[in-house]
Image 1: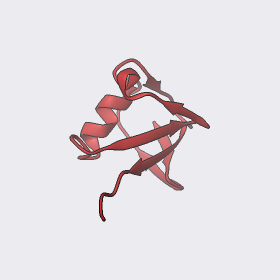
Image 2 (image 1 turned 135 degrees about the vertical axis):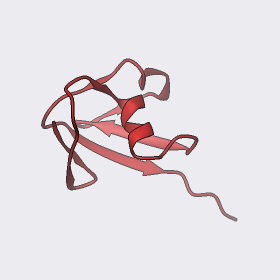
Image 3 (image 1 turned 90 degrees about the vertical axis):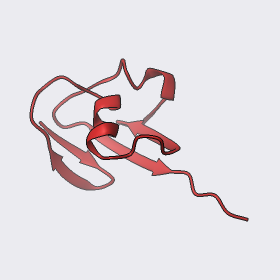
Image 4 (image 1 turned 120 degrees about the horizontal axis):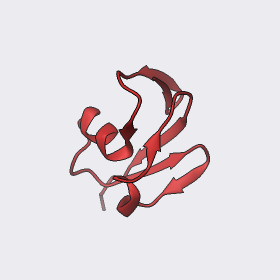
Length: 67
Protein backbone atom coordinates (compact mmCIF):
# COMPACT_ATOMS: atom_id res chain seq x y z
CA UNK A 1 0.00 0.00 0.00
CA UNK A 2 1.35 3.43 -0.93
CA UNK A 3 0.31 6.50 1.05
CA UNK A 4 1.35 10.11 0.46
CA UNK A 5 2.42 11.55 3.83
CA UNK A 6 3.32 15.23 3.99
CA UNK A 7 4.18 15.16 0.28
CA UNK A 8 6.33 12.00 0.42
CA UNK A 9 5.23 8.58 -0.82
CA UNK A 10 5.62 5.85 1.80
CA UNK A 11 5.04 2.17 1.17
CA UNK A 12 3.60 -0.18 3.78
CA UNK A 13 2.94 -3.91 3.86
CA UNK A 14 -0.63 -5.07 4.26
CA UNK A 15 -3.96 -3.62 3.32
CA UNK A 16 -5.79 -3.00 6.60
CA UNK A 17 -3.85 -0.34 8.48
CA UNK A 18 -5.58 2.10 10.80
CA UNK A 19 -4.32 5.56 11.56
CA UNK A 20 -3.40 4.29 15.06
CA UNK A 21 -1.24 1.56 13.52
CA UNK A 22 0.40 4.15 11.27
CA UNK A 23 1.21 6.34 14.28
CA UNK A 24 2.93 3.35 15.92
CA UNK A 25 4.79 2.47 12.70
CA UNK A 26 6.06 6.05 12.36
CA UNK A 27 7.17 6.15 16.04
CA UNK A 28 4.81 9.02 16.83
CA UNK A 29 3.10 7.45 19.85
CA UNK A 30 2.60 9.93 22.69
CA UNK A 31 3.05 12.99 20.50
CA UNK A 32 0.39 15.64 20.09
CA UNK A 33 -0.71 15.24 16.48
CA UNK A 34 -3.28 16.51 14.04
CA UNK A 35 -3.87 14.23 11.08
CA UNK A 36 -5.73 15.10 7.91
CA UNK A 37 -6.79 12.28 5.57
CA UNK A 38 -7.76 13.23 2.03
CA UNK A 39 -8.60 16.78 3.10
CA UNK A 40 -10.59 15.87 6.24
CA UNK A 41 -9.31 16.20 9.82
CA UNK A 42 -9.50 12.87 11.66
CA UNK A 43 -10.40 13.29 15.35
CA UNK A 44 -7.97 11.54 17.68
CA UNK A 45 -10.77 9.39 19.13
CA UNK A 46 -11.29 7.91 15.64
CA UNK A 47 -7.64 6.93 14.95
CA UNK A 48 -8.46 3.29 15.84
CA UNK A 49 -11.46 3.15 13.51
CA UNK A 50 -10.23 4.94 10.38
CA UNK A 51 -8.70 2.57 7.83
CA UNK A 52 -6.10 3.72 5.33
CA UNK A 53 -6.25 2.75 1.67
CA UNK A 54 -3.74 2.68 -1.15
CA UNK A 55 -3.39 6.20 -2.53
CA UNK A 56 -4.60 8.08 0.56
CA UNK A 57 -3.09 11.51 1.17
CA UNK A 58 -2.20 12.39 4.75
CA UNK A 59 -0.91 15.53 6.36
CA UNK A 60 0.53 14.95 9.84
CA UNK A 61 1.30 17.97 12.01
CA UNK A 62 2.86 17.82 15.46
CA UNK A 63 2.25 20.44 18.13
CA UNK A 64 5.32 22.37 19.25
CA UNK A 65 5.37 23.99 22.68
CA UNK A 66 7.29 27.04 23.62
CA UNK A 67 7.00 30.40 25.15
